[in-house]
Length: 290
Image 1 (cartoon, rainbow, N blue to C red):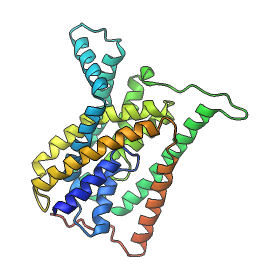
Image 2 (image 1 turned 180 degrees about the vertical axis):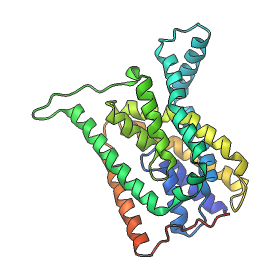
Image 3 (image 1 turned 60 degrees about the vertical axis):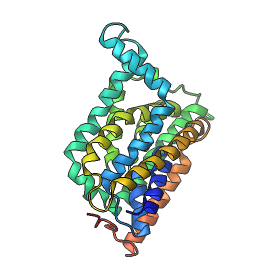
């Protein structure tokens, strides 16, 4: 991998990680369209550490408060009924599904799941799901001619059941094209949470999963065509760009809907299917990376 490739892929990772459009799919597609080797699951997981570092800094006050309360609850210094202490436990519970499924389906994630036909399908299907969830949220928030405005839940109402459902939704993002934020935010909206609450918990829930995944893949970094230098460089680029994107996104969702991302996902999926169907692009383009 050249330094230019690592710069562009780091930029793509930072731009797409927090948007509900799938960063792993865009890394895969960028390499395919450019005629490069697929950077691979290890490169993707490690560069995600960069974007997750942006989450740690952006939500540092929330994270510090949750960790303090959680540790305090272990030693009886903080009541276990405390909201922040409960959030600590809920993040742990919500991280179980992706941990179990990530280890179980590791070979599929690094192989068949990276087929461009599957990515195109998940882009479209999850785009439709996000669109439905967004419409339901908008209907509750604005009401209608024959409907009253309906209050949506915030994170203080999050329980074990909802936390586990969030976790299952996050685990779906093991398939490129699904999108970690897209799946968890959709799940949150369908369960009746506000856009901001769904997004905030989505980002907090991703922290242990992404850091664990990146650490797990460290042993495979530097193998094949992807060296350590370009990987670290891409991770730094992803961090800088990712921080700017998360700050923008959290402001965006307070007043805007997710429909622009829905249209983008569906259009990209259709274009990808057309390119593969016509033979203009191989469904395994770039997969020869060793």
